[in-house]
Image (cartoon, rainbow, N blue to C red):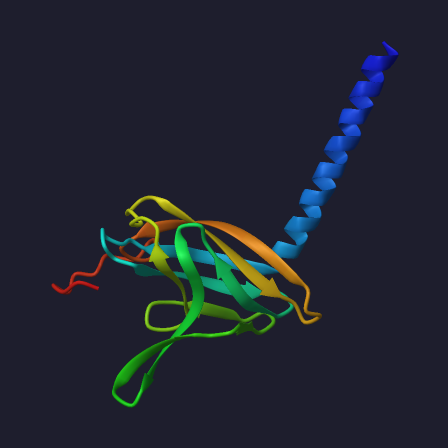
Length: 164
């Protein structure tokens, strides 16, 4: 009987330690809220696509990196007009001011998945990890399972007669 009790107590301690660790991780990751995340579907032979979302950092933070096993290279990119030309470039970090929502969207900031290992099929998901840095320089990671589609969730599909 004593060994059963000890075994149960050991299990309870392990569970408590596991939950405490998970709770601490969740608190760190919860400093940035992610909403409306989606990645654009790709086709065979297409080597890159974008992922989009809204990020809100409660106390301010920086998005310093993105990672995904689905891509050989994952970068935070910016698209902007320079004269008459739309240019896209990787950015070293994206500032997330305290309490302000920063939108990652087509034609603006986005997560770029390059050297795709396989096409991203519509109605599947893609794992993406966002790496944030707080004001003290401490890093935290947030693991996402991002839905893949041809347009943002809840948005009407493009009906313009041309492909995006």
